[in-house]
Length: 432
Image 1 (cartoon, rainbow, N blue to C red):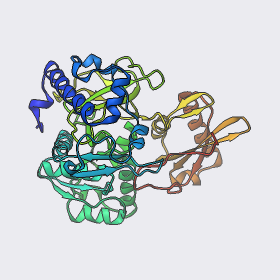
Image 2: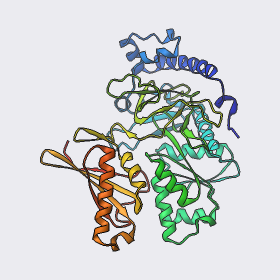
Image 3: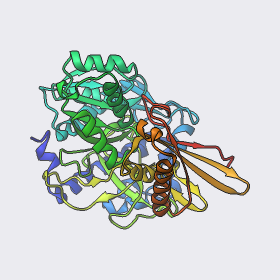
Image 4: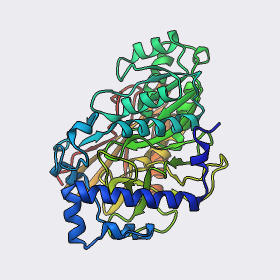
């Protein structure tokens, strides 16, 4: 059952007309009320009133996170503060926080979009949704909370952390849907195994995971350990929060809510569009945001658009899962390396656990990469010869896939740090 079939399945020509009309309205809004965009349009000789085609999107200026920080806190708001009913912000761990605002109508649209994502997975008003994302200024918890309420589900706003209590609540409250990061889902699964909890005795059926890149292999691991349908969802606070895109039960790509967002995929070096289906940086333009519209926002997230139609019948374009970020990318000996590539390889090797860490150091003038891999306890009781064979096998697979030599170190189970939020996979010790 669709949450909003008339919109999610509309013909492309109808959708593009809706997008154009909403883009025209957005351009008028920012040109009138946001000095930053008014100045940008003037510099680029863009006439927001003369915008007649979606093809003209490429003539509009990009917006970056630095632009948001430079206009901290309210410089990019397009409505008076009295019309803003909600303010969220990033943590600001890498600089000044980015602040975003929502009108009453923005909050309604946000809840509707998240409700679409939940419904596409299979969640209904009969479900009990446990949200293990943090609340507060972070958009994840609140966005998924209101979307769950929108479809009439029962919501447990437990927030993040306190793993044993999470599990107890899951058992006692008959949770059917878990929402958290994929790495935290694995942590929960490992803890349940440690506590000898029978997964099949739980009421869990669905899991919606996001907030960090994860692989298809990791999905299979989570699905198997928790006995659930595990779907990916995508959002970022600068554009809306969760609800920008999400997988349906086909689990074959994330449907973008295109009646609310225009999406582009660009080459981050040339800033030009990539060929259809090629990997590139996601760029979003909001079409319905009132308080905080953004034009061509560079997300730094790397993904590709999937051109094939989805069997579910939705006509919104799908995107692949995010494989990493342009600023998470490692350049090792001149080669671009993404942690997700390493994860995919490790998940296919028998005896390894779904926990790893990549340590990058510089020895002399050369980079050295060491991958720490957790392995089953039995591996450490095997002969040294078998351990060496496993190390050599992992090194060979990684070298073949990545195109660079890497060192591999086996570590015992539960040696590497576990994370309740986003997993920190890379430790870069180089002074670059």
